[in-house]
Image (cartoon, rainbow, N blue to C red; front, side):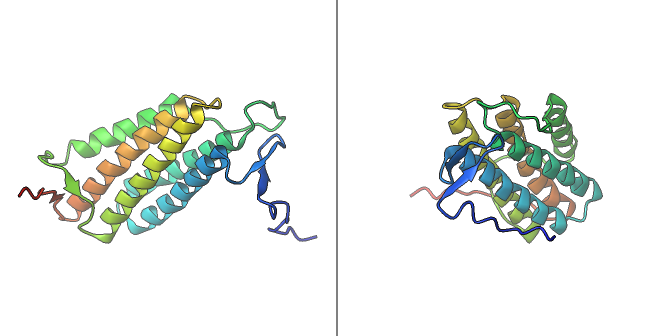
Amino acid sequence: MTFRIYTKTGDKGTTALIGGTKVSKADLRIEAYGTVDELNSYTGLCKELLSDVRSKEILQEVQDRLFTIGAVLAQDPDKKTKMTLPDLHEEDIVLLEKEIDVMTGQLPEMKSFILPGGSVPVAQLHIARCICRRAERLVVGLSETSPVEPVVPKYLNRLSDYLFVLARYTGFVSGIADIPWKPRVS
Protein backbone atom coordinates (compact mmCIF):
# COMPACT_ATOMS: atom_id res chain seq x y z
CA MET A 1 0.00 0.00 0.00
CA THR A 2 1.23 3.47 -0.82
CA PHE A 3 1.44 6.19 1.78
CA ARG A 4 -0.84 9.11 0.95
CA ILE A 5 0.32 12.62 1.75
CA TYR A 6 -3.24 13.83 2.20
CA THR A 7 -5.33 12.63 5.12
CA LYS A 8 -8.24 15.09 4.90
CA THR A 9 -8.19 15.32 8.71
CA GLY A 10 -7.32 19.03 8.58
CA ASP A 11 -9.99 20.05 6.12
CA LYS A 12 -12.03 21.74 8.86
CA GLY A 13 -9.17 23.89 10.13
CA THR A 14 -7.80 21.70 12.90
CA THR A 15 -4.67 19.65 13.31
CA ALA A 16 -3.30 17.32 15.96
CA LEU A 17 -0.30 17.96 18.17
CA ILE A 18 2.07 15.16 19.07
CA GLY A 19 0.05 13.52 21.81
CA GLY A 20 -3.21 13.66 19.86
CA THR A 21 -4.71 16.94 21.08
CA LYS A 22 -6.69 18.65 18.32
CA VAL A 23 -6.11 22.40 17.97
CA SER A 24 -6.99 25.11 15.48
CA LYS A 25 -4.53 25.60 12.67
CA ALA A 26 -4.53 29.24 13.82
CA ASP A 27 -3.26 28.24 17.28
CA LEU A 28 -0.12 30.12 18.33
CA ARG A 29 1.73 26.81 18.79
CA ILE A 30 0.98 25.88 15.16
CA GLU A 31 1.99 29.36 14.00
CA ALA A 32 5.28 29.07 15.93
CA TYR A 33 6.33 25.69 14.59
CA GLY A 34 5.04 26.56 11.13
CA THR A 35 7.32 29.59 11.10
CA VAL A 36 10.22 27.43 12.28
CA ASP A 37 9.44 25.12 9.33
CA GLU A 38 9.44 28.14 7.00
CA LEU A 39 12.81 29.17 8.42
CA ASN A 40 14.13 25.64 7.89
CA SER A 41 13.08 25.72 4.24
CA TYR A 42 14.61 29.14 3.73
CA THR A 43 17.81 28.02 5.44
CA GLY A 44 17.97 25.21 2.87
CA LEU A 45 17.73 27.77 0.08
CA CYS A 46 20.50 29.86 1.65
CA LYS A 47 22.70 26.80 2.04
CA GLU A 48 22.38 26.05 -1.68
CA LEU A 49 23.40 29.61 -2.57
CA LEU A 50 26.67 29.47 -0.61
CA SER A 51 30.00 28.16 -1.80
CA ASP A 52 31.82 28.22 1.56
CA VAL A 53 31.95 24.58 2.69
CA ARG A 54 32.05 25.33 6.44
CA SER A 55 29.03 27.65 6.21
CA LYS A 56 27.10 25.00 4.27
CA GLU A 57 27.94 22.40 6.95
CA ILE A 58 26.77 24.68 9.74
CA LEU A 59 23.54 25.50 7.91
CA GLN A 60 22.93 21.76 7.48
CA GLU A 61 23.35 21.39 11.25
CA VAL A 62 21.02 24.37 11.78
CA GLN A 63 18.37 22.69 9.63
CA ASP A 64 18.59 19.60 11.81
CA ARG A 65 18.21 21.70 14.96
CA LEU A 66 15.25 23.56 13.45
CA PHE A 67 13.55 20.23 12.77
CA THR A 68 14.16 19.38 16.42
CA ILE A 69 12.61 22.67 17.52
CA GLY A 70 9.60 22.01 15.30
CA ALA A 71 9.11 18.60 16.91
CA VAL A 72 9.46 20.05 20.41
CA LEU A 73 6.92 22.78 19.65
CA ALA A 74 4.51 20.31 18.00
CA GLN A 75 4.21 18.30 21.20
CA ASP A 76 1.28 18.89 23.53
CA PRO A 77 3.01 20.15 26.70
CA ASP A 78 0.23 18.72 28.87
CA LYS A 79 0.58 15.14 27.59
CA LYS A 80 3.32 12.58 27.90
CA THR A 81 3.95 10.58 24.76
CA LYS A 82 5.71 7.30 24.18
CA MET A 83 7.50 8.86 21.23
CA THR A 84 11.11 9.84 21.91
CA LEU A 85 11.63 13.34 20.62
CA PRO A 86 15.01 14.80 19.73
CA ASP A 87 16.28 17.51 22.00
CA LEU A 88 18.19 20.75 21.84
CA HIS A 89 21.26 21.37 23.99
CA GLU A 90 23.24 24.37 25.19
CA GLU A 91 26.11 23.00 23.06
CA ASP A 92 24.00 23.79 19.98
CA ILE A 93 24.02 27.45 21.03
CA VAL A 94 27.74 27.32 21.83
CA LEU A 95 28.41 26.06 18.28
CA LEU A 96 26.66 29.11 16.84
CA GLU A 97 28.55 31.43 19.17
CA LYS A 98 31.89 29.91 18.17
CA GLU A 99 31.06 30.29 14.49
CA ILE A 100 29.97 33.90 15.06
CA ASP A 101 33.28 34.61 16.82
CA VAL A 102 35.36 33.04 14.03
CA MET A 103 33.57 35.03 11.31
CA THR A 104 33.54 38.26 13.31
CA GLY A 105 37.29 37.96 13.80
CA GLN A 106 37.72 38.24 10.02
CA LEU A 107 35.19 41.00 9.34
CA PRO A 108 35.82 44.73 9.30
CA GLU A 109 34.32 46.61 12.23
CA MET A 110 30.73 47.74 11.72
CA LYS A 111 30.55 51.51 11.99
CA SER A 112 26.87 51.94 11.11
CA PHE A 113 23.70 50.00 10.60
CA ILE A 114 23.80 48.12 7.31
CA LEU A 115 21.20 47.57 4.63
CA PRO A 116 20.46 44.00 3.56
CA GLY A 117 21.82 43.34 0.08
CA GLY A 118 24.89 43.45 -2.07
CA SER A 119 24.35 40.02 -3.62
CA VAL A 120 21.59 37.45 -3.81
CA PRO A 121 23.12 35.14 -1.13
CA VAL A 122 23.66 38.06 1.27
CA ALA A 123 20.10 39.33 0.77
CA GLN A 124 18.67 35.81 1.19
CA LEU A 125 20.57 35.32 4.46
CA HIS A 126 19.09 38.59 5.74
CA ILE A 127 15.60 37.33 4.85
CA ALA A 128 16.35 34.11 6.77
CA ARG A 129 17.42 36.27 9.72
CA CYS A 130 14.10 38.12 9.61
CA ILE A 131 12.12 34.86 9.48
CA CYS A 132 14.19 33.66 12.44
CA ARG A 133 13.32 36.79 14.43
CA ARG A 134 9.63 36.24 13.66
CA ALA A 135 9.89 32.62 14.80
CA GLU A 136 11.57 33.81 17.99
CA ARG A 137 8.81 36.37 18.66
CA LEU A 138 6.13 33.72 18.15
CA VAL A 139 7.92 31.26 20.46
CA VAL A 140 8.30 33.96 23.13
CA GLY A 141 4.59 34.77 22.79
CA LEU A 142 3.75 31.08 23.08
CA SER A 143 5.92 30.79 26.19
CA GLU A 144 3.80 33.44 27.89
CA THR A 145 0.78 31.12 27.85
CA SER A 146 2.22 27.62 27.50
CA PRO A 147 5.41 25.85 28.59
CA VAL A 148 8.31 26.09 26.12
CA GLU A 149 11.78 24.72 26.74
CA PRO A 150 13.91 27.81 27.59
CA VAL A 151 16.67 26.67 25.23
CA VAL A 152 14.32 27.08 22.22
CA PRO A 153 13.96 30.89 22.20
CA LYS A 154 17.60 31.20 23.23
CA TYR A 155 18.69 29.10 20.23
CA LEU A 156 16.52 31.13 17.86
CA ASN A 157 17.95 34.36 19.26
CA ARG A 158 21.51 33.17 18.71
CA LEU A 159 20.62 31.79 15.29
CA SER A 160 19.40 35.19 14.13
CA ASP A 161 22.74 36.65 15.28
CA TYR A 162 24.54 33.89 13.39
CA LEU A 163 22.55 34.57 10.21
CA PHE A 164 23.34 38.29 10.43
CA VAL A 165 27.06 37.65 10.79
CA LEU A 166 26.95 34.95 8.09
CA ALA A 167 25.34 37.46 5.71
CA ARG A 168 28.17 39.93 6.36
CA TYR A 169 30.80 37.18 6.13
CA THR A 170 29.36 35.87 2.85
CA GLY A 171 29.63 39.35 1.36
CA PHE A 172 33.12 39.83 2.77
CA VAL A 173 34.56 36.61 1.31
CA SER A 174 32.95 37.51 -2.03
CA GLY A 175 34.53 40.97 -1.99
CA ILE A 176 31.19 42.72 -1.41
CA ALA A 177 31.26 45.50 1.17
CA ASP A 178 28.46 46.10 3.67
CA ILE A 179 25.96 48.71 2.47
CA PRO A 180 25.90 51.35 5.21
CA TRP A 181 22.59 52.91 6.13
CA LYS A 182 22.82 56.66 5.59
CA PRO A 183 19.81 58.15 7.31
CA ARG A 184 18.35 61.14 5.56
CA VAL A 185 18.09 64.06 7.91
CA SER A 186 16.34 67.13 6.58
